[in-house]
Image 1 (cartoon, helix red, strand yellow):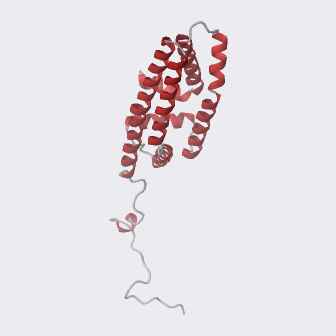
Image 2 (cartoon, helix red, strand yellow; image 1 turned 60 degrees about the vertical axis):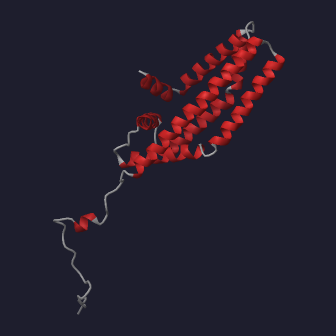
Image 3 (cartoon, one colour; image 1 turned 30 degrees about the vertical axis):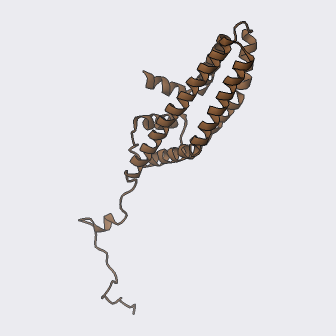
Length: 202
């Protein structure tokens, strides 16, 4: 059930955006009660424009790099979650490209986590200094939940990528080009060779 839900979200990014929009609006109204619902909806939507653009840009680049459609990319992501290497050589190459690109994006993960801890810690401190207990507790819990997800979820995602890279490295994509020449039943090669003089034309 959870995997089907994840596939649905991956196929329909607009559904991810809508659910994130509504969830963030609900959190803001919970932390700051009494605010106008339309105003909060508008502010959250405006604040998410950059994230939406960035997500769409990454998805578009991944589809071009892997030569996949949306459904093809979703299939690769599902196989990545299950640790399943594609059987088709072309799909293995697409998976390899996807894994390499995502691992490249995580090369500064440690520095990014430090920045996030400082950012959310600073926001929590400023909220405690300028707002009431309700807002301080709400922002603090939100910061703890997000940072926990970033550390644990991000770590698991990177481990899946590393594991898939190892599996791909042990999965041959092509047969040995010299195999056909040495295999039983292969036709013998005629012509000049070591110790055999080449026949000169008359």
